[in-house]
Image (cartoon, rainbow, N blue to C red; front, side):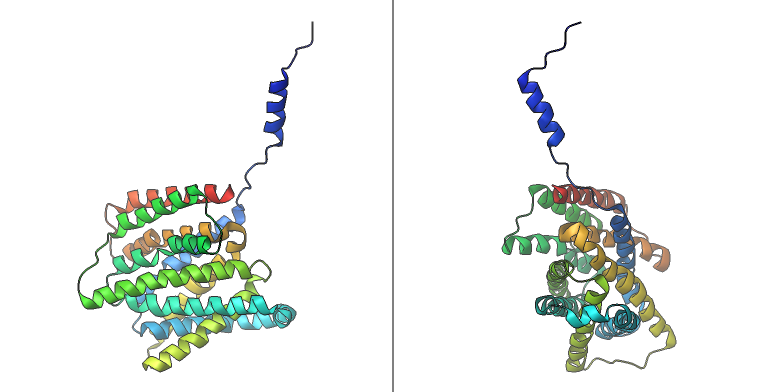
Length: 311
């Protein structure tokens, strides 16, 4: 039986198909950690709303408690790294902490000035700001990332609506939430850069310490009450620290190195349906019928962003 003759063009095509590099797979372990992070962050808005303490004071104490938990471990296990951290990485980590403080200082008061729906919708512009800032610094996002981000954000708008009002106080709260989204994007990008060379523990200790110091200055400047609450309020702040800070922000800092700022910031859009679910179970605020198609849109957008980021 004669040998089968393979055309030269087919041979070239087969070779190209074999040698064509495949898009890298996103680490499954980091995707699980990101899911835990989103669950922790989703508790933030309902818990802040239920805590009878000034928003700025809550932001300050949750960061102080985080440093109190992470600090001893960092000094024990990462002392040499903290001592020898490069000047550039240190300045970037401090900058990220300052931006995180701005994010807290803007968003947490906005929850008590405008509706939770408006504050949530506007603060979750973070992925849009992230892509714009990346473009400003010379990193062009793939078209699929842009499309996915817009689809995911459309899901947020479907869930929350855009109930902007002309009331001066509500408009001020909307502006604060929008600024908080921009600050969070800068924090995410600086953190991603620092995490290229610095461990999660070392970075978060420097970042949260800076955040606490900046928030302390803001609290003192605004005359915010810093103490005098019941044990239950302190317990709520501690719970917020564990869930939103240690499991939320710290785990997002952990995975941003491998997943990238686009995927990480877009995934945080899931905070909106997550917070709605927690509010339904805890506060009895049942989500609207739009919650389900909104969740589908957010997940679809996240898939597009992940695929675009891999390419």
